[in-house]
Length: 163
Image (cartoon, rainbow, N blue to C red; front, side, top):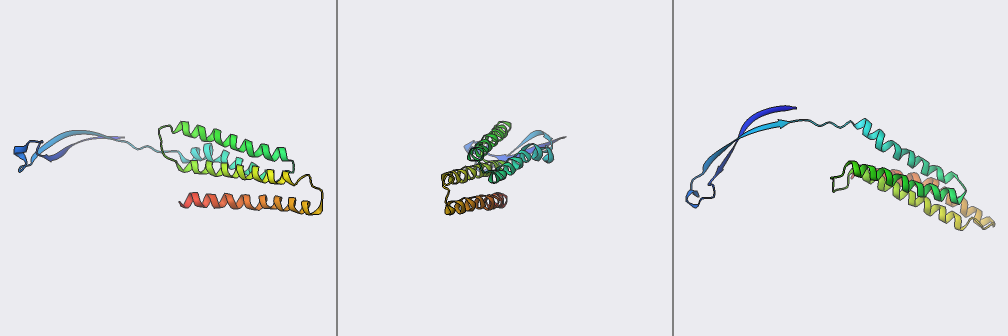
C-alpha cells in the first residue's frame, strides 16, 4: 500500500458566459492511496475446480454402469452438486452482474449431466428387448456415451478457453 499527494489541474470557464474566451486554471489538492490486491490462484483452483473435476470424472464412470436408476441418479446428482457449487460461487461474488469464466465450466457440467441422462433414457428404452439387434443397439449406446462424453468435454473446454 502506498500513499502520495499531488494536485489535479483543470482548465475551465467555470460556466460563466463572460469567461468563454478565457480559460481559468483550477488546481485541486489530492491525497491518493494505491494498493495491490492479489488473488491466491492455487487455493481458488483447489476450492472451485477440483470438485468440478471430481464431478466430471464421476459422470464419465456412469457409462460403465448398466443399471438405469444408477445412471439417472448420477446425472441428476451431478446437476444438484454442480448447482450447489455454482450457487456458492455466486454468493461469494455477489455484486458481479456478468458471467465469469468459471460459470462457463458449470454450464459445461450441466450439459454433460443432461447428456448422461439422455443416454441413460435411450439405453432404458431398449433395455427390455432381448433380441440380438437390441443387444447391438445397447452396445452402440454404451460406446456412444463413452466416446462422446470426453469429446463434448474437451470441445467445451476448448471453446471456453479460446473464447
